[in-house]
Length: 463
Image (tube, rainbow, N blue to C red):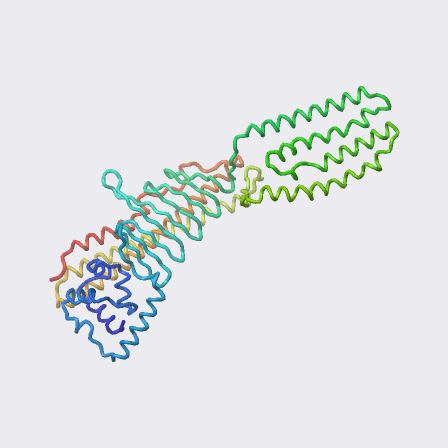
């Protein structure tokens, strides 16, 4: 669209005392659509042009009056059409059948809205906000944020779940539990009947091997043959559990075949010495069966399990076996102090911007109360004051998000520090000293901004 027309739209809107949000609401559009018109990135259609002309009290000729030539207008329209075709999947929002509105910009942002529920998707991540009403009419909201720091969920009661590279932290009623982190998390399945039978058989075979060796030693006393020949029976101890494991997993290569071959060869060789026959020389050929065994059964195992998906195994460090380190304790304490400093700084910025928001509110109310001057001057003062107020409200919302993020980081750092001390038998700070956050604090900025907007919208327009 022509930049001259875009500037005229901005001028007419401000003279009418309307913000972009208010104008968009009157036209049934998104604020982004109005913003694109005023940046000359898009053109309003015929219906919207008629509505704008009536709303501003001007004719279409006055609204679209321009000094550009026909060739320039045609060239600009062609360039704009090409730009819209390239950004077709990311055009401005249009209401869907369910009443939800979706909007996006040319900067890789997507905005979905259904009443008070919103979904924002951009390069920084995904943010989902769902609003509801508690018993008694009190409004509450829950949110889920997915970004490069992890996944953060806050329900309507203020309980949080944070998943990041430091583990899983669950906060309920102001108390944080480290489900997974430096302390480790282990899940133990109940043993199956097959595993119990395997353990019992292994223990039984171990006892029988000891008893068999002792019997052979005491009974076969001729040249102490029992003691010399009987000890290879202990090779059965590792063979039995691997046999059960091979049956359970259906993998032949799990069976300890080399142990069986070595036990048989040693028994034959030593027994041959006792009866005067050299079994050492011909029976060494048994060891050739080891590579033959694996060459045969390794492909069979692969064929049996060819359809199994690859499993991703996560190994978590078990802090229960860590030695206590004062350096580690100092590092964790330093993280707590840094997180506390970040939180205090974020709160200070939020409080400062809240004061700025209140000042803008007062300036806006003063502009509306001051009816001196012409109608155009009055509308321009109100529009400028409203823009300043909207900018201050946006800054407060950003500060609120930073406070929430800093609060989560502080809670996690505190929980990790206390957990480390408790695991090593050290005295941890009491629960009374734990960081607590007013459940209404996270939504204070949004509530303030919403209250201001509601109050302003109730003010009568200038006549």
